[in-house]
Image (tube, rainbow, N blue to C red):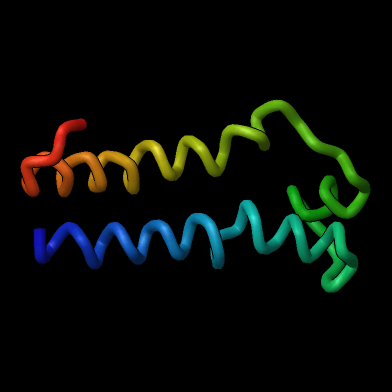
Amino acid sequence: MSVLLPILKVNMAYNTIGGNDIARVTAIWMQYVAGISRQSNAEQNFYWFNSDDNNLWNTNYSATMIDLKQILRKSRCKV
């Protein structure tokens, strides 16, 4: 658990606060930064695709939530 908890914290912080899916998109929509190429250009023009909704969920589910479940198991909590 002493190894999993720091990894869990880093994944959660990156994915929900500093990660690309939330911070960049919000900054572009609020016009703090400009999207000029590749996917940022689409967001600059307010294009949003079905797959964009799932990016953050998939990232958190594939890593962060799996680690959290292991921590709960090791601490003998019911999952």
